[in-house]
Image 1 (cartoon, rainbow over the protein chains, first blue to last red):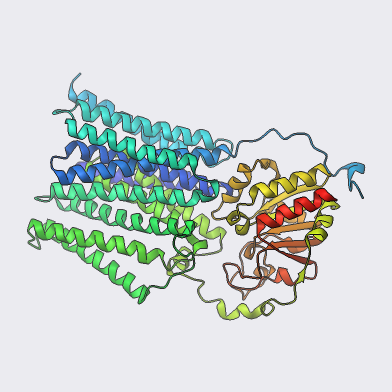
Image 2 (image 1 turned 180 degrees about the vertical axis):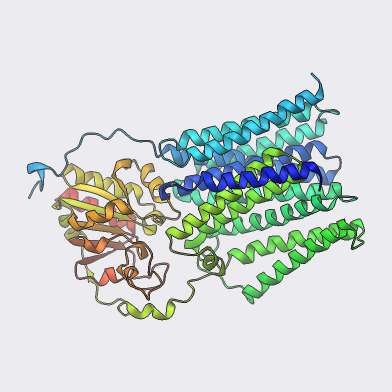
Length: 110
Length: 478
């Protein structure tokens, strides 16, 4: 194996360990947004699509690169926007003062 | 500036992008910092993609006009489609959209790998061949697998497990074909097998095709309720496929981001499966393994249940001090989140203390119920997680169960039932229980819910949305 490949393997291994650690303590509430967020990150394959587009020199490669670009861009843009929409809903809303069950207010209308 | 210098800066920008992904993902572990985390991750993506464009434009030979058009037009079409669907999708349909985005991501990784393979065909070294073939194979599996999973959630494909004739055998045979093809390609690259370029391409075609069909036969037999776990698993696969593409291209940001998603996706899959008391193996093999024979513990079909009318429920709710609402899958399917918020606000205006008990797997995905209720403007502090709310059921006057089933079944506390050991909401501890449900149909576990035959329980048979609207009207009329 080339030196470059060995370095890549080292990066790969460390990134896997980081991936395991970064996720360990998440409340279940956030599982879906987190999955969606991770989903947007693998849209990084868009970079790969750009590189093959640049190197394409025949109709087959052009077609493959074009479809890969469309797919990758959809993954990236759609992924981040939908994750943002989900997370936006977790912001704390100012709760209007309301009557609670305390005191004589216990069973109104009873 | 020399080309080498530019490449150095581009490389550093890629690393910066990768760092943003790690930090962004970390910030998404908490609701307070989640949104900024996602934005940080998006910023990392902009940096990485921007740097790549600079690199391609400035390197020797530059970017041909055709390539530039492919990149720009492809980005506009794909990005536009993603933006439009992400902004317009109803929050209830959001899980299948995530699945669709995962499918196209996997498809893109497969295409990048396939294109590289065609280019390197004559004289690709062994190691490159390994990564190319793995990327193409994994990408193909996630492409069709995610499409099927999304189709199941969307209802385009029946959610119930579909048994393919010869089922498991076909799936295993496909896996064998894919592995053999991969091995043959690697041996070909090593020189053990002498393959001409046509044979090599045909072999890759076979591997990709086997992967595509494998994705279908793998997901079809899995029930709709397990789809979140499956999507999460496929998400992890796509990350791995992206990392494989990174190895082929020698690109650090693809390797780091891909490995990051591959690993975090795997952990997330395990967390989700744990919350549902299922093992990943069990889900992938399909259906509840074992346990079934002991399921007879519950009362016979229907048992004796007490039906209750809308007006009775309205009176119970309106004169209660404390009501705990237990929303479930049925509420998500009926899109009744706005209706439930309306009822809750009406009750609060009458002085009733209203809280929501959120089971970790309520809705269609873990955390999905929180998103749905938040969308309907239910104040976040009213949403209580299971550990927090369970002690409060003892003091609750009414527990209103809306379309939730297995997560409330007291049978889970005893051994010998398919749901045994699953963490449940202690709904049966409430003074009175009202269940809104369309029919006596069984939950995902396929067993009767003992809660329904509890003497304290009244059943209100209605669609979640219609039932809640009728209740709201009845409470108003009091």
